Length: 135
Image 1 (cartoon, rainbow, N blue to C red):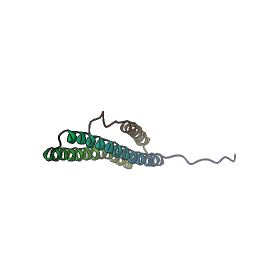
Image 2: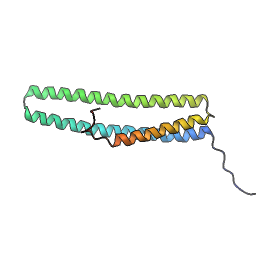
Image 3: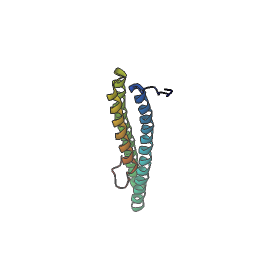
Image 4: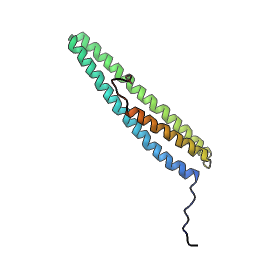
């Protein structure tokens, strides 16, 4: 028998391969969140311009700019908070894997995390800033 046998896939190797894909997906999620935030910002600016056209006073323009800056600051903080929560979950998963790297359960958990991340990216990429809340 002259068959070439492939080395067995270990839990650590499977986890590492899945972790690389999750890191790529995290970057994709950040890109989608930033793209959606840019659309929401453009929509807010359009609403502010319409408001300024109706009430063209300096005081009103100043109030609208303050509102825009507060909304932008809140939106940026909300995006960062969401990414931090996701990263904390991933760090917790990594720590559990490091503690018991032969456990295939950690690979399954990471693949579930990957699946949920895939669904989240799909949801975020379909958001319309005109119909969703500003954040």
